Length: 293
Ligand code: BEZ
Ligand code: FE
Image (cartoon, rainbow, N blue to C red):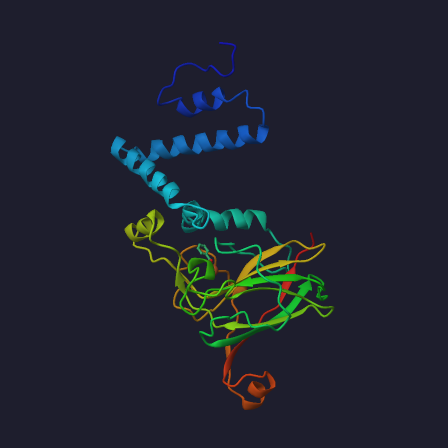
């Protein structure tokens, strides 16, 4: 048998080797490497689990349903990758940061690329709901220098726990979204509402799987950021509320100790007047350190 793609008949014992060698003429070496690892691990998985025919069909029907549930707005496969911890593992592998740089976390499916650029200090709450929150800090490099002209793209749910894109026609477009640009001092600040924990979409096969596994679908309260600046690595991250009930059981494993922020209630009358609001508000001060590109 000189043809490397013909390694004899398939048996239970040699299954992975026979399939992998059939792909010996793959043109792309990376595809070949990826498929060989996939086949090796899948055959190993099947040999460990020994599924019945019915169980295998159940797995296929689950993936079929996951595809059927997905469209331009709903990505059930991303949710599946998220709840299995795979999204966070891919994120960790691709974002090994130098010492001192802020850590990344999962992007999630609710970022929109065309959120409006707003003047620094704007309120991204367009529906008037929730407890007022002022978020501020600086964008720095790993030497502690301010990063000028950094683009800060933020988004969060409204006080009912939904992103605007989940409630089109109910929430104003771009509610709780904004893009801000730092000046020479690297400072940023904007108003929002204190975030709340919310469930990831759980009305599909992934939600059913979570239920069957005895898991809840909640993410602890957070605000999303994508921070971009010339010569710097893009940072995709969140800040989290450490007092949230779900902080130790995020459905998608996105929490990191360094991403905890402090949500301080400001009740001082002078500060309230100074900020131009008429009631106590929450204040969050959080700096981000960007790694060099
Ligand atoms: C989010 O935080 O927006 C999110 C992340 C993963 C899955 C669902 C939502
Ligand atoms: Fe989120």
